[in-house]
Length: 333
Ligand code: SF4
Ligand code: SF4
Image (cartoon, rainbow, N blue to C red):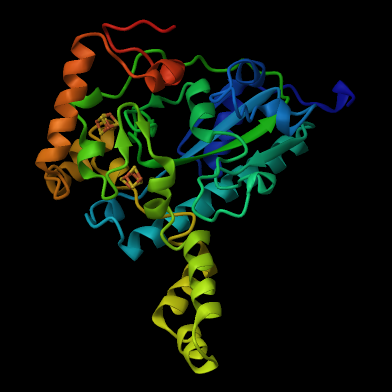
C-alpha cells in the first residue's frame, strides 16, 4: 500500500480511540516477537499464520467483567453467563469500531476473536479441547497488559483475571509496549483458583483444558451433540418429540440464541483471584470464603509449595515462564 495514504499515528492515539469505543485497557504487542515466541511451538498459532501483510502489531483490547455477576458465587448462574455475553458483545463492538477507525487512517486491520477456533482441527470429537486461532491471553502478555497465573489465566493489575480480551492485527508502525516480567500470581501459596474450581481441573501451573471446557462452555457443542444423539437413539417418534420439547432442548436453544453458556460459562477461578484493584473494594466481602475448598485440594497445594521450595517446578512452568513472569527467586529461561 502507498504510505502517502497512511496518517501518522502514535500508540496513545490508538489506545485512546479504542478506549473511546469501550475498551477498558489496551496494549500493543510486536507481531514479529509473537512470531518468534509462539506459546505452543507444536501448534504455533502466530500472527504470520493468519496474515502475510497485516500482523506487524497485535493491538489487544480488554473489557472488564461486571462485579455484580462476580458476586454471585455459584459457578453455573445463568445471570453470569448473560452478563458476560453482553460484555463480550461490547468488546467485539469496540474492536470493530477500532478497526474501522484504523482503516480510515489508512491501515488495513482484522480482528481475531478469542472464541474462534480452527475448524480444520476438529476431528469429530465434541469433547476435545480446541484452541483459538491466536491466544489472546498470550498476546495480552506480549502487549504488557499482565501475565499468566497458576491455571494459565490472564492476570492484570487493574482487574486481575476478571476481564475479556480480543486481538486486532494491523501493521501500523508504532512503538509496541514492553512485556511485564514480574509475576502477578502469588502461586500455590495462594491457590485460590484451584480451591474454587468446581471441576477440580487446576494443576501445578497448568490446567486440564478439556475438563475445564465442560464448565467454561456447559451448553456448548458437546452438549448439543450429546442431545442430538439422545434424540436419534430414542426408542420411537413419541419419545423423540418429548425430547425435542424438553427443558434440555429449551436450554440449548436459549444458549445458542446469545452464546450464554456457550462462549461464556464458569469463571470461578477468575472470581476468587485476589489479584486486581477491584478485589478488595468490590468483591472480597462475599468471595473470601470458598465453598468448593476441601482437604484434598489443600493437601495438593501443600505438595506444590513443598516441591517449589526444593526448586522443583513442573515442565509446564518452564514452558510458560515467559508469560507467567518471574517471582522474586526465579529467573526466566
Ligand atoms: S473456568 Fe471453572 S472449571 Fe475452568 S479452571 Fe476456572 S474454575 Fe475451573
Ligand atoms: S487465584 Fe492465586 S494462585 Fe490462582 S491465579 Fe490468582 S493469584 Fe495465582
